[in-house]
Amino acid sequence: MTTQQKEQTIALAAVFQAASLVEELARTGDVSSEATQPMIDSLFVQNPDNFDSIYGESAEGLGRGLETLLTVSDKSSGQISPDVTRYALSLLHLERKLSKAPGMLDALGQGIQQASRQADHFSNTHPNTIAALADLYKQTLSQLSFRIRVTGNPTYLQNAATADKVRAILLSGIRAAILWRQVGGRRWQLLFSRRRYSDICRDLLTESDHNS
Image 1 (spheres, helix red, strand yellow):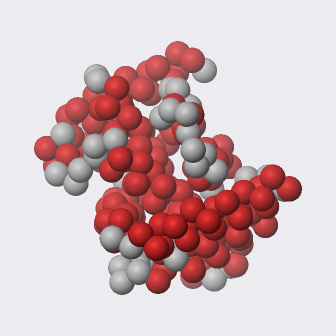
Image 2 (spheres, one colour):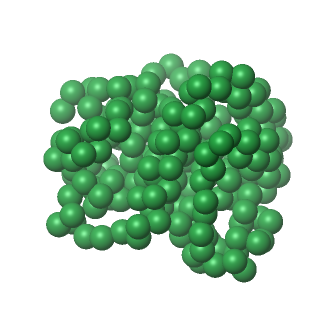
Image 3 (cartoon, helix red, strand yellow):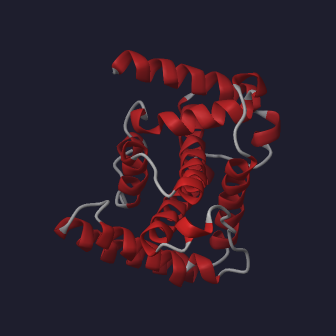
């Protein structure tokens, strides 16, 4: 695999990790902090020295996303909820809408800087930080003509803390979608490069297992 192909796979896996986390949150009201942490952390890496500084050199925190992308790319690997695929494709579509709104991109950057001050005072995944990120999502991405419709258990979705987590994770998914586009990711690859994505996912998952 080339460096660019590896980076595309990692960024797309992050999109699918966000989608998988949102689906589980909406359905059960809870998600693994281990899988959530690297997604939220990535939002606060605004001026990375290199690609690896965003998700880590071997993307160990993206195991869930790599496994999900592998399943999507290679049907023989299993099945996932249709909602996960819908959320992932919606994130990629929303990123395209965002790219045509430079003023909103600036607002997102400024909002994340403000949220980072909350993170410095508390932690990246403290409820106050998550609430700040969720509010940023509401004030920006929720105002675009296309909105991601999250479905699940109304009891959980009507809970303020759960709704905040959903929006914060969606924001991290947009960050991943932007990154995917920046390293050459294109929608057509989802149809015509599935074999490549599945092969690289397997390699990265094997590498992660060896490092753990």
